[in-house]
Image (cartoon, rainbow, N blue to C red; front, side):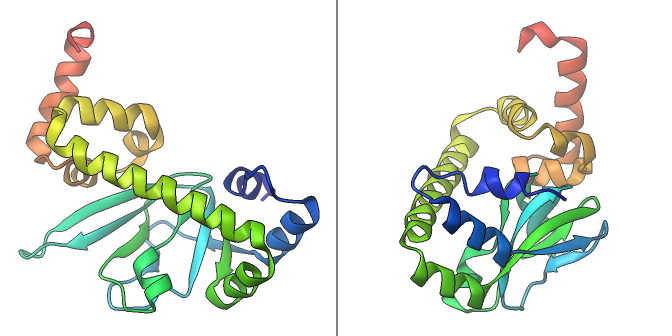
Length: 196
């Protein structure tokens, strides 16, 4: 693994090189196999990861016990359960690897040390959290304002690896549609690509 995913993730104009060096050195390489859980429901998140290669997803179990995908994590993204990590409470979500994954891990205590030591890391954290909040808000609005086909196309455009590697059932639950509806959408896109 190179530091490329760290460089992309911590791309923030105010970092000094020595600050980045210290942050990068605090991360530890970690490998997961397909099907491994990064975090399980009921446990506390004690670290976050930056995904160097692979694909992961988070999901919850609904009131009927069905898995509902809440997020897909692709390369160069932060794999984190923010509420559990920073409120120090057990998580309701599961995070699992769809493919083999290589990550950079930063544990909670080390993050706290760096957070208080490097003011620019606090600024980066605020900027990152603002972007995440915007993205989640955007997604929740799009669930009601965009058609299922448009939501599928947006996912294809933004995270094509999900379409390539994630099972249909997981993609359907993320988009808020049934497996059958998603199969129909895919067939329509293949047979009538210019209609969309």
